[in-house]
Image (tube, rainbow, N blue to C red; front, side, top):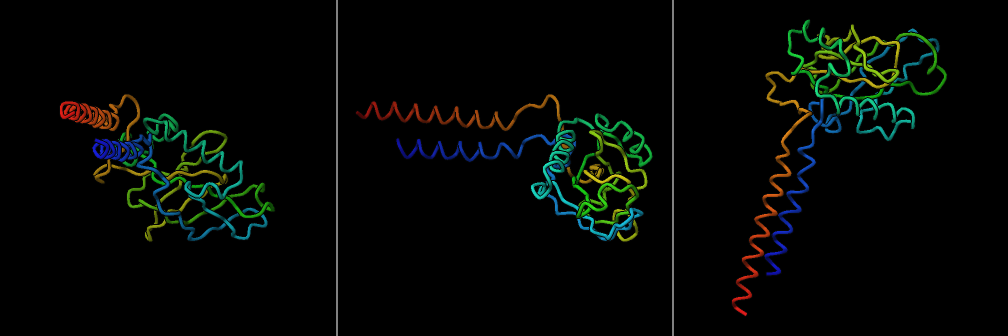
Length: 225
């Protein structure tokens, strides 16, 4: 009886531990913490005194940022994770999708990262940065978003060059998100809204079976007694 109970409890705990894998990711292709860190290939700037010390920090390394920077990145993550479609947080992505000849429903964010310069000497200076970088899923790249003043905007000139690098110019540093197409990739973009909680149903079903097994075992023991 004790062995049966222990086995059943173990199975339930194992299945329960799998539930986070079913958690919705809103308009992400999946958790950005699973992606490789973006790599800076090159940068130039019109900002006076800029010495090339640009840092790209992926979402999974957000604890390396200052308190304010981390809060900005987490706020940007929250908006994406709670959006059923990207048009909910950046309406102009509809035009981007039309120009790229892809469906809005097939667009999702792959990478989320924070870009900033080391040191405070040039942090508040005005000017533009032209950034060349690498990150995951650029073969499916559609657009690049920038998070500033609490909202997302499209970086109009962002493109993937002949070397497979993402190149863009911005006068604002902060949180950025790469938008990719999930069409034909075999990946299914997680959806928000009214979803049937299958993971919980599975666990509930296993729990019910466990209770039945325990009840039958208890009856048999009682009869033997």
